[in-house]
Image 1 (cartoon, rainbow, N blue to C red):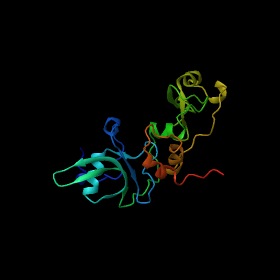
Image 2: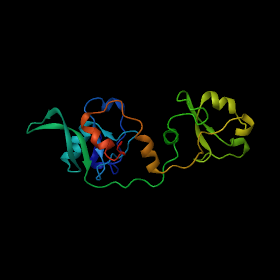
Image 3: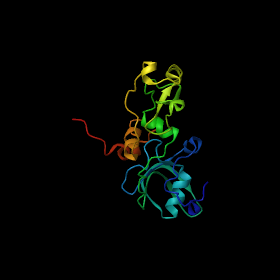
Image 4: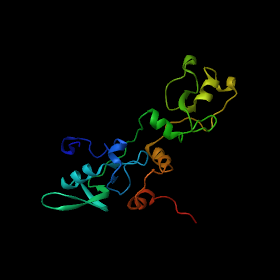
Length: 199
């Protein structure tokens, strides 16, 4: 288990290996009671959540029925925890493959397919196109191969929406559309409390 006391950025290092999260993960909320991240969902293994509670860095909001035992006490495993200090969201979004796919809703921006995804330069690099938010989109392999190094006009293709640089808020909004595979009942109010209510 990672030693949180020596981890400078422990509050934002919430993405863990899936194997570590199979049993009793804790949903991590910012001090404003919103998840640090929706996709991937901000989760800690229960061991890290318990350690952060002992170190007085987080508060427990909800618990599992399961307990753990130490020589001195019995503790219910936290299912939802909230940071005591607010973490400011980053203003600029890192230009990564994951964030690009998230911006584009994990679908090809030419045909809408969600399988066999890669990325494509709208203006090909050999024609001066840059590797940037405004020139790279998610694309399925067939569309990528069909377009090749041609322009959209030459290939007879068009984008579903213009490529643009997203804000952190944009990615949070997109991320909320992808519900986690395993959703504990205690998490639901904190994942969707600020969603618009249906009439």
